[in-house]
Structure formats: C-alpha cells, structure tokens
Length: 114
Length: 207
Image 1 (cartoon, rainbow over the protein chains, first blue to last red):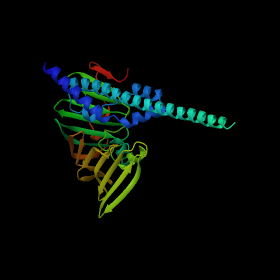
Image 2: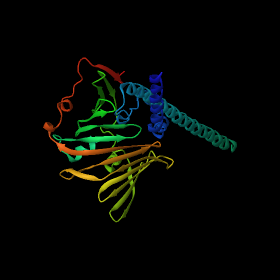
Image 3: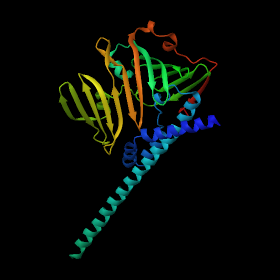
Image 4: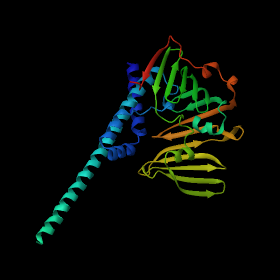
C-alpha cells in the first residue's frame, strides 16, 4: 500500500517535471517546418530525465520516475509537434487556396475584358 | 559540469569534494569529475548510491540492493548545474542582446532568435552570480544562484553553493573541500568502475 503510494507520487512528480522541462516551442516548430517528419521525431526521441532528479533516490523511485518521465515527455512532444504540423498544413492549404482563387480571379478578370 | 571544467583543467586531473543537496530531501555524498569523461556521485545518505554520468549513459548503482540502472541519455555531457554560462548559451544559438555595467556588476541579456526565449547572466567581479531563464511569454522559468567562488587550481574557481529554482521548487547544492587531484587521490571504484556480475542491471531507453 505504502509502496504503491510512493510509486504514484514518483510518477506524478515525473509527469510534472516532464511537462515543465519539454521545450514545447521547439516541438511546435519541428511539426510546423518538418511536418510528419517532425511528429515522427517527437515520437522516436525520448526525453531524458535529469540526473539530478534521481540523485539520492531509491531504486524503486528511479524505475518509476524514469518510465513516467519518458512517457509523459514523449506525449507532450508529440502533442506539440502535431499542433505545429496542423498549423503548418493549414497555412499551406490557406496559401494554396489564396493562390488558386487569386489566379482564377485574375484569369476571370482578364477573360472578361475580351 | 565536465564541459565547463574541461575548458580550464588538464584531462589528467579530477575535481573532487563533498556535497549536500537540499530540496525535498537532503542528500549527502561525494563527487568526482574527470573533465570530458565522467562525473561520479557517491551518495551516502539517504541511500547508498553511486551515479556515473557518462557521455551517452547514466549509470545508477545500488550496492546494498544489488541493482543497477543503465539509462540511455542524449543530453550534453554535463550535470546541468554548471552549464548556465555564456559559452553554452552561444553554442545553443543564443545571441547577446544587451549588456549593462554598473561598477563591478555586469548584466548580460541573451536571446534565442528562433525560439524567442531569453537568458540573463549577472556577474560580479568576473564571477557568475545569477542566471535567469525566461520563457516565450517572458515568464521566469529558471533561476540559478551561485555562492562564493574559490580558486582551486591555477585560476580555476569553483562555487561553494548553487541554488536552483524552477517550477516553484528550489533545491540547493553546497560544496565542501573541493580540490583538484591526480588519479591517485581518487578511489579505485571511481576510476575503474564496473558493475559486479551478480548485480541485476535494468536497461532504460535502449529498446
């Protein structure tokens, strides 16, 4: 019972630390500029728990903390890379639509003069 | 730590001393740094633990539990505490945005042009005293305060205290008896560390 509680505490601490440590702007940029490649990188590259957070901790704490930190860190990375990817694609589609309709409108306007 | 130290020290020497980490728990032990190669912490309280920070692996060994972890890591070879300096910021792509000098106090502001984050380094009399990191919205995300620096080897100076505040929690490291020694002054288990064969090794991040 006590062990389960301390494991839960270690996991909660790891998740809070991972949420604070992961560079969200970097992963949004990766998704924005690299698209699915950025999302893939966010999924493959696991964040590392800082060594100082494991100093003086028990083996049980280290085991739980490391797993929870990597899992939460990866999920934050992927979420932000997906946001970046969606934003990038929306911008691309928007620019393409503007370009397409702009060209049509120009062609239409040009055609109406004949 | 090793990245910074390697700039100042010959690679045949070790930096060693005792430390007390205060935060949620109090951790006591010794540390040994071989510039550019490894950082070793020997924790004596609250748990018997040996931690080795190697270029790609973090090894954590518990002699009393006969258990060890080998955690793969990708971060720069440093324990983070001494990486908050101008050289590392410039290496990470930050550019100097402004500099303000009042007496012997110099405050330098760095900005990352792509990420939009900022860092401020305050030095007094040539020694770094404070490092503050700001997020994209200008919020403070990290504050590192250094104590008094003492010369331990031919112009190389080491702080007696480092205090880190991040995510509403503060932890501090006090260093005692820091000195620079040759291999003879370092325990054999630090120089030639090897996990005994009867120890259970758990691998993390190698899948």
